[in-house]
Length: 392
Image 1 (spheres, rainbow, N blue to C red):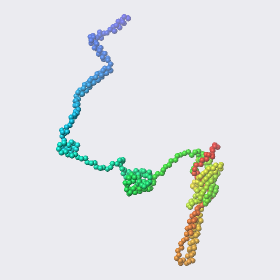
Image 2 (cartoon, one colour; image 1 turned 45 degrees about the vertical axis):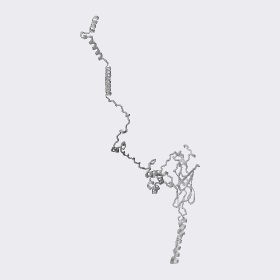
Image 3 (cartoon, rainbow, N blue to C red; image 1 turned 90 degrees about the horizontal axis):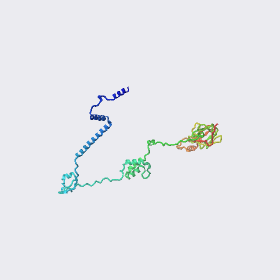
């Protein structure tokens, strides 16, 4: 069995008669070379073809360049005029041609035509160094801008500035007009266009409000003394309730605080309120503070009102009585004399003199005890140095 299988393998390995190549050896080598070329790398083949094409292109380009250089024309050498020009060989133009060209040469033989002489330059305006002179309008504008910096002298304001600019060339009429324009007072419209200056104030902290009684506070008070403004004097009042601090937490002026004030002089004609100044406040605990604040009524109006005595009969009663007595005496004398005389009676000046003397009597204000008045605080009161806080 083993021999049979081995024979079969040998038989299978042997080629068939049809598969045997009967060609000569030379033909078989060409076929092998074609098979090897067919199995070569394609990238190398493409690279080889590209190099070959580039070499052909450079070859033709080189041939074309050589041919173009051979076709260029030769440049002739520059000629130098080494020989000198003979003046005798120059042909002069005719007179007609000379008129057309003033710079043409003139013929050496024959009558020479004189050339045109250049006209002397016409005298122009003198050249000034620096900028051109300014017009009157420009000078007016500059002077108006600098009018606040011009000192007063022989020519003040706008007219002096323009006169200095023009070097005294302005006429007296022009200077008078300019002075009138400069001294013109502002119109109502100019005054209305002026805006008020806006000031600037910085804010600041007022401190501990537990101890402050700020300006503008109104403190009620009850008069303890009556008032009569015929002579200067003092007045006092008592605070009827507690006065608290600015934040409303601490009592600064206790109930019963006594306030002292003063008034000077009386009333003038037509006045019905008296100015009173409160000087000092004294608390029941012995704390004193200077007020320097004006008095007001219960509603906060400045000054104290009361009954005003104008002394009407004292001022005019005597003059009226004297006039009546004088008129009665005149009427009685006319009746007794029969009225036949033509004497003109001049009224006496005694009544007018009495009225003038009575003008010195000033009205007097009287205010009763117990009336309600007020203290208008005019400054901040600080009690931090005398008071301390504690928790109840």
